[in-house]
Length: 252
Image (spheres, rainbow, N blue to C red):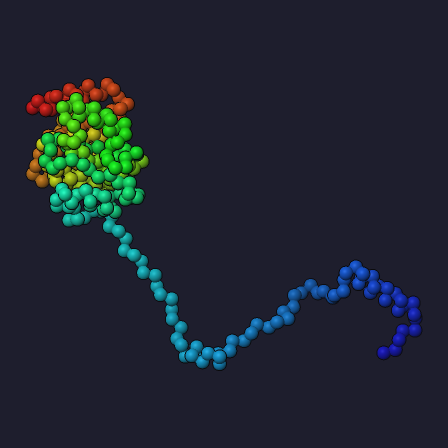
């Protein structure tokens, strides 16, 4: 290649290159990316077994059978001694931690059985250990008895804010409560709370005290229904009405 005859032109080219080099531009750039390294080709010769090994389809997910939506009556304990352990462990009774459930307490065949809707929020070892329990103990003292002499139970195993009572009825909680009362076989039954009363087939009491009968499997037990203990705590005027109903009930 012949050298250019104009030395000034060479000086211009050299100066321009030097200017770009001093500016830090010493490479050529293009807009489109270029793949310099080609992807490696698979070499089946390194593993000849892979050529003959069949490809297995992924195993289909096996769906677990959904839990039954309703308690099986055949699963209910046949003896009262077995009821409390079942009450504390049966998953279909309610959700939540099993450790927060509270067992019923009392002897079989008592003169009086009392059913409340649910344990108190602070209950840990025994049923009704808070303000509701203090009110109940005062009522029992007025009735001439003690907590140790009655059978105390709840319609729900644990404290449950805002329970869905119709759904619990559909699950079979009413049948469980009726079966529980039959196992205890009390001479008299008090149900405190309209929701618990509805589980065994009675309407909520419109007043502080209503006299009914609990009929189940051929047995009839005198029943006194009243408001829940929380309502009685907030309605002092309801207590004399309940006391009068108790006197009439026990005088019969």
